[in-house]
Image (tube, rainbow, N blue to C red; front, side, top):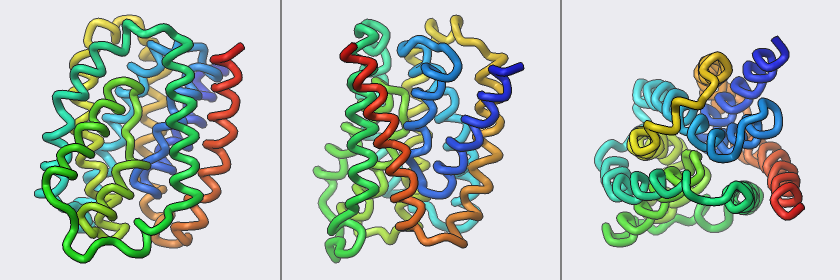
Length: 250
C-alpha cells in the first residue's frame, strides 16, 4: 500500500511538470523509482520510458487540440533521433549501475541550470530559425539521451526549438512532446527484454497519475508565470542531482 501511494504521488508530480513545462517532469521519474520505490537504475530507466511514453502522448494530444504543435519541424527532430534512441536504448542495459546514476545526476543538473538561466534562447531567437543540419544534429543528440537514460529530454528540446526554429514557447512546448513521444517509443522497443522485470503493479498507477497530472499541468501553465514554474522546478532538480551524485560516488 505504501508503494502504491508513493507511486501515485510521484506520478502526479511528474505529469504536472510535464504538462506545464512541455518537458523536465520525467527527470523526476527515474530518481523516484530508484529512491522511493526500490528499482535498480537499469530497471528505473526502462520503467521511466514507459511513463515518458504514456504521459508524453497524453500531453501531446492536449497541446495538439490547442493548436500548439508544429508537426513538420517536430517530425524532423524526431526522425533524426530515432536511430540514436534505439542504439542508446540497447546499450543502456550493459552499463554499470553507478555510471547510469552519475550520468542521470549530470542531466538533472543540466536541466536545472537550463531552467534557472534560459538565457538568450527564451527572449531573442533567430528570426528565421536555423538550418536543417543543426536541427538534425540536435534531434540525434536528444534521441540518444532518451534511449540511454529513459528521460524525454524536453528540458533540452524546448530551448532547442526556440533557438533553432524561432518558435514561441507555447509551440516549442507542444512540439517537444511530439519529439519525446517518438524517441520514447523507439527506445522502449529496444528494451523489450528488460520490461519483464518491471513491477507493473507500481508502474501502472505511476503512469496513470502522471497522465492525469499532465492535464492539470496544461491548465496550470495558462494561469502561472512560466518563469516561476521553471525556477521552482529547477530547485527540486538541483536537490535531486546532488543526492544522486553523492549516491553514485559513495
